[in-house]
Image 1 (cartoon, rainbow, N blue to C red):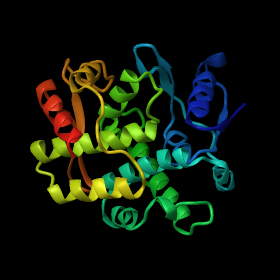
Image 2: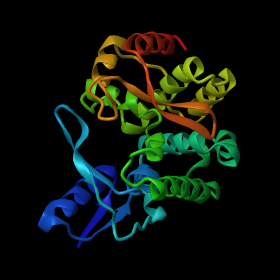
Image 3: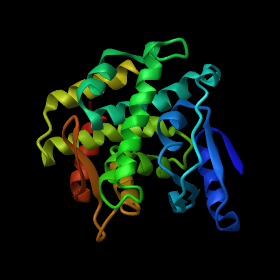
Length: 263
């Protein structure tokens, strides 16, 4: 048995080795970062990066169980806290309702190991993601909604070779890109975009793109979520009502990113 004690990279790598060694051995996820607690340790996606993209070599392989010792989060630097908070914000937008309202009411300073709200937000994220995965483990449909913000995020990480932005920071920026496109494509209320940007600010997360729009759009063409050669986005009609596999033209992406630079 392999014990994956660490953050998302450790969990993904250990899970990938477990899925391939002797055609599969048991492993346990013990996440030690907020991001791993609420996202990568749940769902069974295991993978490693390649020069041509993030998580391009991998499989679906479920751990025996996940044990999240929250006390170890006290050792995390602020940037690692922000990474996990970005995924919490993403999950709350997808879930909508009370969860989204709760996330909007809080800020970066409210989430620490002594906080009473932290266990609630982690539990809600895990509950939401687990429910989605249980209905679509291999990502043939519903599970695709969990990629909200990730089309832009993975392009940002690829362009900067995973050095300038953390995953959570890239996701935060990607959420705004997706919501701006949602306004045009699925009728998202501008108030939700405003609320999301304010929430990202409160959690000390970036929301503007500071990279070349054409270069990002070019990298999106290689995203593994694409279908039929077209770039596919997860968009929102409103909080709690995501839509997936929405084709978006490169020209529209470039214009949106340019708009996002000026927010």
